[in-house]
Amino acid sequence: MIKDIQRTIELPREDYAEKLFGNFDEYAKLIHKTTGTTMLLREGDILLMGDKEGVEKGEEILFEMIRVLDHRGELNDQRVKYIIDLILEGNGGEAKKLVDGTVLINADGRPIKPKTLGQKQYLAKIEKNDLTFGIGPAGTGKTYLAVVMAAKAFKNEEVRRIVLVRPAVEAGESLGFLPGDLKDKVDPYLRPLYDALFDVLGAEKFHRLQEREIIEVAPLAYMRGRTLDNSFIILDEAQNTTIAQMKMFLTRLGYGSKAVVTGDITQIDLPQGKVSGLNHAMGILKNIDGIGFTSLTYKDVVRHQLVKEIINAYEKNPGKEGQQRKKR
Image 1 (tube, rainbow, N blue to C red):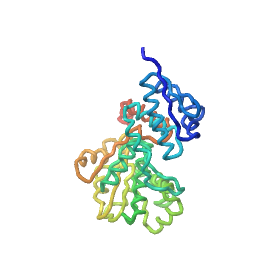
Image 2: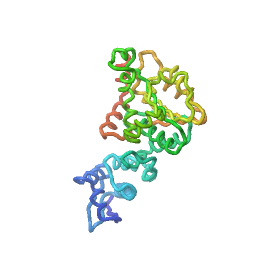
Image 3: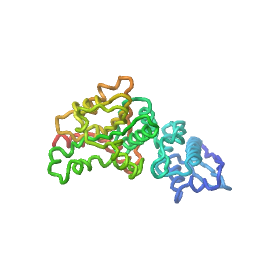
Image 4: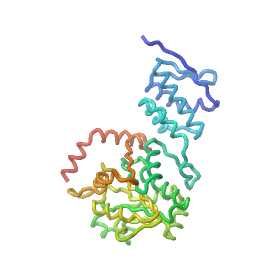
């Protein structure tokens, strides 16, 4: 029979105790649920009690939480759950890589940092390669982090302009029936790109740069026949490109430019029988030097915790969605 053991975690600051336990002891309860370890506050420090394996895991979790507090000053549910997942999977050493690495300061003065290991690897691929593919489900930060890297490259004078592109597949021929001019018709499909730019640059600076044509947000059809030099180009929702459209986009890359292609291969809206240009590109370009691929998963979701659970459920049951698509 394994006997319970005790271990004391000395806290570097008095206010850490409340933050480590969480509101209404939610973090202490989560650690107990996942490791079987009980946390108690004893004379300003934390006492861990449980079996040897559970206490060792609990201690490792608390040390990483303390490291986050030392570097960031706060914890949140998402970060704590991610630390616990990493350590329970035996990847505790990887958690240390997430406490630093500010990429950019956003318009509100908030540092933008990768929140998961997948995001950190994605940023490294963008930094290293002239063409990077970021593939993953909604909420993993594919588009947002690409925009952040574009803003960083512009700020560092590595590029002269930013070009953001999106196919308007869902609109199809119905564009002509929508009110307004062409900009009014396509703006709803480009809204996620605007939102990311507003957060990173601020609305006022974005509009100023857009008026000077330093930032261009456009539907994919506008790219035909162009060569984009000294630009940071992002193709978003690339799963909705055809093979011909993907080839057209990739061959726009000019001298001194960098491109990022993002997409979710589980959310293809092309007509039945059309092959996704993203799927095709993933198959034929994977062994070319200078092209990087990053696959993000539900573990990299940085939205509400339920989004992660929903995506995980769909990944475990892909057949139902596939059957529905065939009936269209």
